[in-house]
Length: 168
Image 1: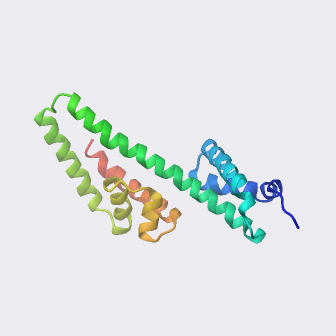
Image 2: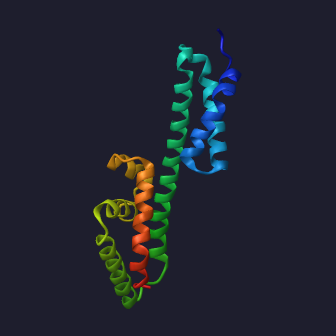
Image 3: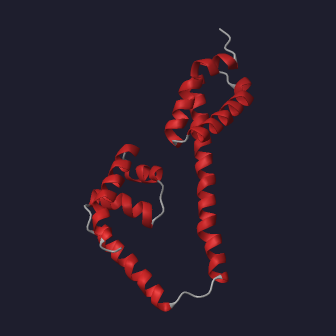
């Protein structure tokens, strides 16, 4: 049987879109990435030799497009953290010493509050806020499902909230 590209889109299109949406959690972004997946798949379609692997091939393209997007996002995030910060340090006047001491003191107090959490909650909070890892990276690093990492982050924040109010 000779499968056309249109047949592939009709058969797997909705599941590919739902898969992308489950990864990125934003409908408009998922739609954009879905279009990129379809374009890449359409351009590479003639080179596929094994029709039985169409589905896994399409899902692989989808995850790779999502990864590309996340890499771009991380680079933009890093730019704002590094480049803009270094610019603002050179442009803005020096911080008043008292403010600097207060900032360091409150950051230290916050770190102490985080350290009072049980290890299963402390670890994801520490990785996310102090080592700037994404939830995906935390899940991969700790060999946990994404849902477990999200649950632990939420529970850690719920436990920290009353403790942090004393700092305000």
